[in-house]
Length: 137
Picture (cartoon, rainbow, N blue to C red):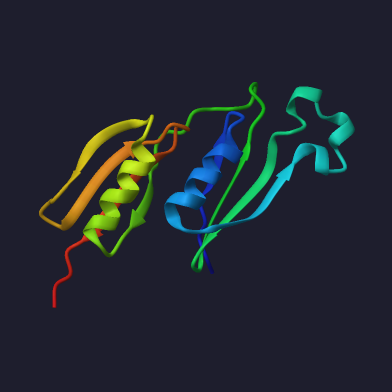
């Protein structure tokens, strides 16, 4: 069994996934547009280039998402995607990349449980928690 976040976007899924691919060192393995589906003729012309399904693979982890039509889109709330990173400098790099043009909710810093921890909402409206736990031997 594998749990995978499925993120929804208001028309900018492709841009978000390209950022995540660069930031996480993953690979986009699917970026299917509405005009590539059997429903293309039923899709409004200005929405045909939007993403109906995207899939990013990072190691053995998968992040999926799609664009949602404006009348159905709801901003995210009530969750954060947590990214656990082993190296504090890597945690800081990822935090900087994801927070560019976004909103920092808690600056990345040392906490009582982590070498680095920070919270942000990226430019695409996705809330993230970056965590680099302290290793106890």
